[in-house]
Image 1: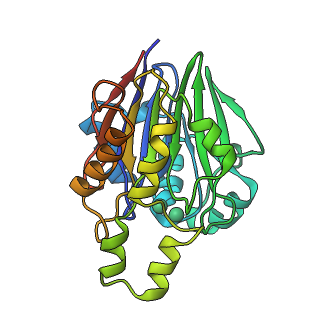
Image 2 (image 1 turned 180 degrees about the vertical axis):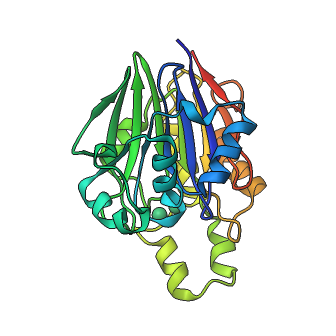
Length: 263
Ligand SMILES: [Zn+2]
Ligand SMILES: [Zn+2]
């Protein structure tokens, strides 16, 4: 069976990821309006009525804006850990009791196995998601100041990896953000830079030619070309060639990516 993935939106104005094996389909985060998410699903030829669930990484608005409304519209469960639920319940509006799913650890969803991993970010209990199906592994890791050891291990040998490349450090430091915000972004609980993403990637690639996607790019402190080149150059330095040893693509704030098919 094929797994399909599309990053519907990525960045500080809204995040959402679509994953399906044909039987079960779900979103990781829904940080745009319900209407916009439905539109983006249409753009990649997915009937939004097929979505069976929504998994939340953390309570920030750019990840939760449309979660409540989509749960009501589609009558589907929302999965989050206890603290994240507590933090975003008020802003979600009324959610049916049967659609409130609280996980503690790994859980299954159809033939998928979902493993939440704690990450370092300024939210209550933020997680990255590792999604397994048979021998395939997909990892979605954004919104983190640095990569914790436990997550590092999970990033190795993924078939598809969405990794944060939030900012170019020079652009951030010479840009217009106030100092407290620059500090927050660069801090341990902030966001991962292009350099940090570029540094870790060569350690994660083990001959399986994974699909790497760069995500949560800042619109002020990054640009797609800079992010792509920074990562590509670092990989080249380590002897890894894009399109031979790995596939490298960007994700977007204003449009969905194509549908990646994992066989
Ligand atoms: Zn975010
Ligand atoms: Zn966040």
